Length: 175
Image (tube, rainbow, N blue to C red; front, side, top):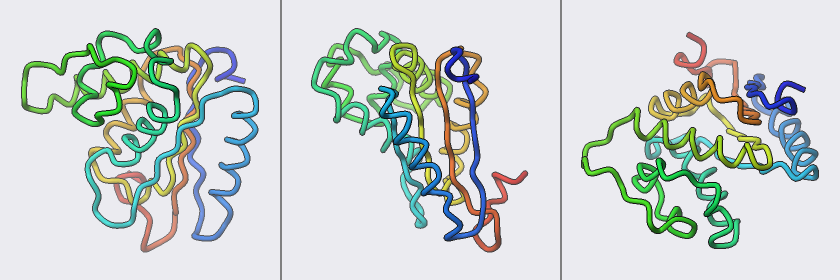
């Protein structure tokens, strides 16, 4: 209800391996997709992966599954920093310039990611599904934290699955 009213909501679905977390989240995502809500999926691999891996995976899905140019009117001019994460932004906004600095400025990147999600969520609502966040790298958790705390009233539901039992329980998530 909070998301339908234009708000943001985060739900962590926790439990031991094999308890049905992914199945539950998939059912919710399917039901919302049937209501024309954009569903984006990212998975945290168990091995050490590139920073922001599941969030880039979700972003790439959005950018590649949408016909070229369809997102153009929704993508704000301020998201050029996302070109550091994905070349697929060019399918919709090839005119965006990457910020001049070659050094990663986390705030700029996080703001750009949130702005893009907010723009899409404002048009049709977004469900961001993140699987296995107990394996997420620290940069991923920092960006996720930024998305959760963002004050935007966009219709965004973040569904995250995580194991809450040893040895998979993440110290960063539980503290």
